[in-house]
Length: 308
Image 1 (cartoon, rainbow, N blue to C red):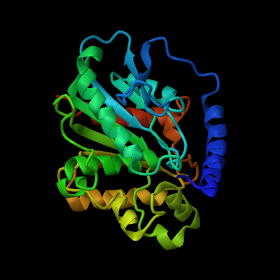
Image 2: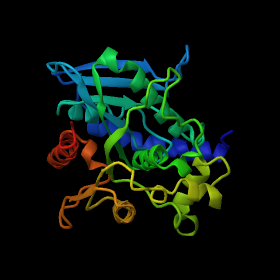
Image 3: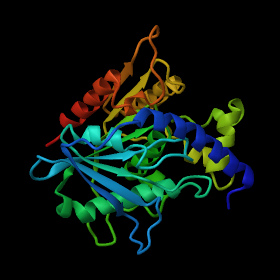
């Protein structure tokens, strides 16, 4: 059960982040060239939680099966949902993809690994609904930013590292209907958080967030478990890693780059903006920003170059 202080911390984050996102998306509407399927339950429950719903976006004129991008939203593990990411995700869909934009259960009301469980359920939903929505399961990609990049790093590690996967018995390579789970062909980490270990003693805010997120409040064992850069193997998907000047997590990009290099994983690194003209954390989510257009083009081209 979430403590009162943890709920108060989450409410403060939600209020502050929400103001900025509403300002960013003011006046935006669904593009005319996008068809959207909203509020689809992926939980398998008759009465799904609002946190276990997804939207699917496709270009209207696209025919046949489309490559897929799954978006794992950010928000410090306590904030965000598919509505906050809808306009960003529809811009990616316009580049020729079917876009899966989902909400997941947030801390502190739902402690880790609730977000991992929900991500697994989304991939099961993909396997079971590919024909209905004309999805190409041979070309499935994923993007995550900030805390979403952290969640995606753990999920991709669990899917490709058998020893690490033992910590998550709910992650299986087949669905309840014995359908194979789609492989993540490549992924993109945007302004992400990866290295958890040093935060135990250095960053009071991060230490508090770990208490909000983790069932035991962030023990040494829990911190090691969720160290996003600590469980990569050579089988980890090819990765596009980006940050920008002005990103408060700027120093996290080298952490995941070193881990990718050590594991021998193919990757690209991009840094946007300039020291004299900085951007900001998760700038790529602003569809009205030219730097975001460039970044999202780069990422989608990274994916397209890997489509069979």
